[in-house]
Image (cartoon, rainbow, N blue to C red):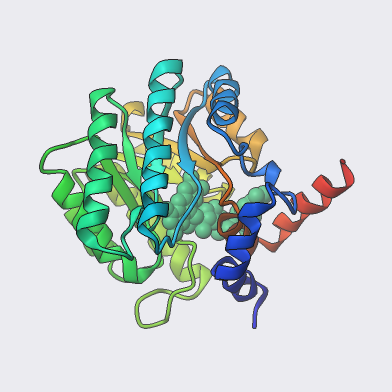
Length: 301
Ligand code: FDA
């Protein structure tokens, strides 16, 4: 088993996920998770805003199989939206449908999302539906489509490793889209497996949406992709208000600040909350060198 598969399996382990919640931020997670409470995350956002960086806030949590837990997550996200509005910070919401009941019942999840999207809409706050693994892809698109009949403050993610990504981006080109490589382990009948194939499709999708789409969030830490896309944007005169770069909180911070200073719109994905374990393990799966973060954290104590 590769190191990547090992960390992805750990990220999906229900027992470890549940236990991690009880013990606060551990294993160095505090360097990539902006606290466990709403006041803490608002403070982190203010610091990033002061550097010219906007934020998308993720109340950590996924794969919820209990209605009470999904309802509690909904209440917490509603409270985050109120806090963003009241504090006046430059931030929007990212959420995972499986935290809000997608695996329990479609209509239950729909109603939770509807409440969130409607409140955010009253404050003109955008809500991004993060994309999870393949089984949850189509129902998440269905939820997005249904909710967009009444609200236009929503968008989603296209994962470049999926064969169907090209078709999906065409269908959803009138939405604000975040384009990523893809973070889950997917089988070879639905997804590209090699870095080369994924990178190639990633660039193609980014270029397509930059030229044809509503708004593109270029979400990557890959400097080669970023340099290529900067040149593409210049060559094609893509206006600044049609795109932004995105990276995760705690990763390549110098590059985040540098891009914002160069005048690019930049948005940091800011996760917070108790449910940090699965998120953190996926970051280790993507790049085992992220273990450096753990080591630094342990020795800086
Ligand atoms: P990748 O891991 O492919 O690395 C490419 C190269 O970049 C490396 O070889 C290295 O040279 C450099 N590099 C990368 N990270 C570095 C670091 N920390 N320090 C130094 N060099 C580094 N996925 C998903 O399935 N659904 C989703 O909704 C989202 N949402 C999302 C939001 C945001 C804002 C981001 C940035 C990412 C996601 N993802 C995601 C995760 C995404 O699919 C992908 O798994 C990760 O971004 C890793 O791929 P990268 O393109 O960042 O670099």
